[in-house]
Amino acid sequence: MLALLALVYGQTLSTLALPNYLAEIIDNGVVVQNTHYIYSTGLRMLVVALLGGLCMIGVSYVATRIATGFAQRIREAIFTKVELILERLSHHPFDQ
Image (cartoon, rainbow, N blue to C red; front, side, top):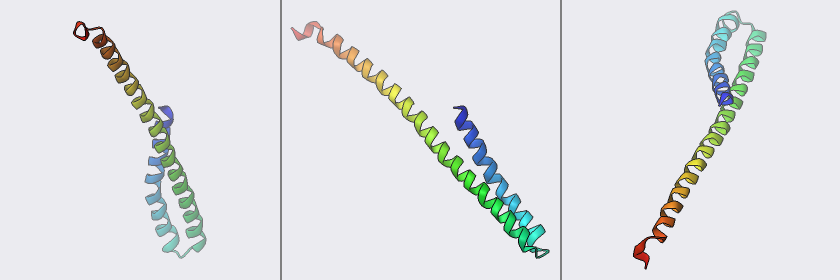
């Protein structure tokens, strides 16, 4: 569960950081025509976007594992309950 929160946090940070990088490119690169700054900041944006994508994949994986485990426990509880009901019904006097 803690891993899920950390991955969501990483994904959110990367999503929120990208507009700031774009603003830096425009303010410090495009306006003053500094192509080196544009490329270096663009590369940082690409790395941040890739890390955000990895976090998104991790969130999907961990959330799926949690949901699958929860569904399995629910199915086991229902199956146990149905077996108990069927066992009680099989010993019911109406069967005779």
